[in-house]
Amino acid sequence: MQLRVRALETVLTEKGYIDPAALDAIVEAYETRIGPRNGSVVIAKAWANPEFKKALLADATKAVASMGHMSRVGDHLVAVENTPNRHNMIVCTLCSCYPWEVLGLPPVWYKSAPYRSRAVKDPRGVLSDFGVTLPKDTEIRVWDSTAETRFIVLPMRPAGTEGWSEDKLADLVTRDSMIGTALALTPEQAKNQPKSGAK
Image (tube, rainbow, N blue to C red; front, side):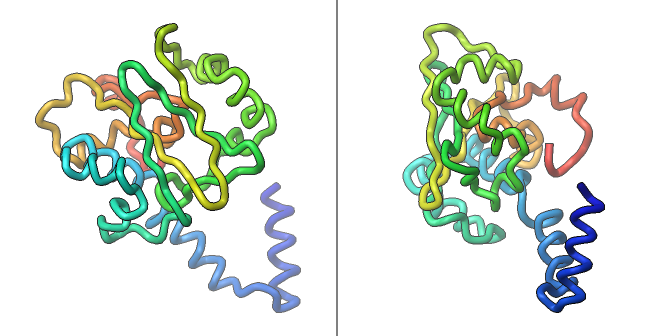
């Protein structure tokens, strides 16, 4: 696949359709400034700051933009909160609409037909495939993203994190937990995670 991409890039560059410097700038942006670390910082702030959490749930686009370092997030970003009684999961049944600025590039499985169809019909089964088993009485809500409205899950704050800094809390938030196909890491799980900006 990489060879095909490089060959295509070479042909398009030689024909003058693309600028290699512009491509490098886009790749650099997604490697360093755009991605799931942005989302994890947002979630950590919501966990630590009740006023910010209230603002995030009321208007996620405005709340995320207020953090300054974020770029424009789609047309309308909605944050949905996991609770002991409700778990939220995100899908785009038509294609792969996704808030890139806070979650990075969508994973391959998010774009796959099996995920897009099963997430709606059998969300509990999909969660089981991801290793997430919820109590039978936990309601599961599936939110369908569109080009106009995209979602981010506010996972439950793990126990044992009282008094943690926002930076430390952000290490517990994974991309998948913000899609709803995983839970936030426990402090113990986080110890075994490789240090990365895109867990």
